[in-house]
Picture 1 (cartoon, helix red, strand yellow):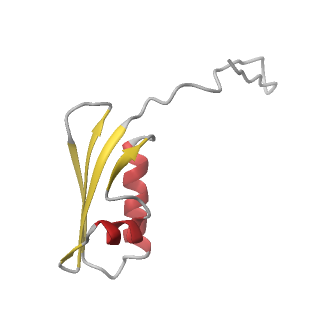
Picture 2 (cartoon, one colour):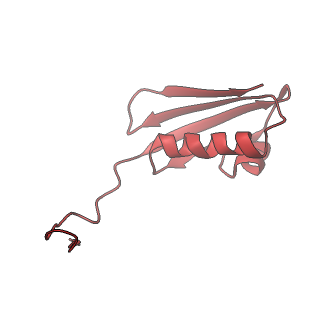
Length: 99
């Protein structure tokens, strides 16, 4: 176990490493300007496979997908859907629409 000591006001110790708590299975569906993207196009646009496994919080994946739309896809009409299961729980659907 690693620890950290702070000399700012007093000695403080906290855990600096922990097992990963996120196991996410996901599917990305994107319709851009009326065209449904295939797996190759999803990967080219977002840099992530259309179906995959993610080991960070789902909010991080949502942030990355939304960032692509806000910057590179700002002129596109996009409906983006992320379907995911966190740690084997029931599926959750997140949708981002940019029109």
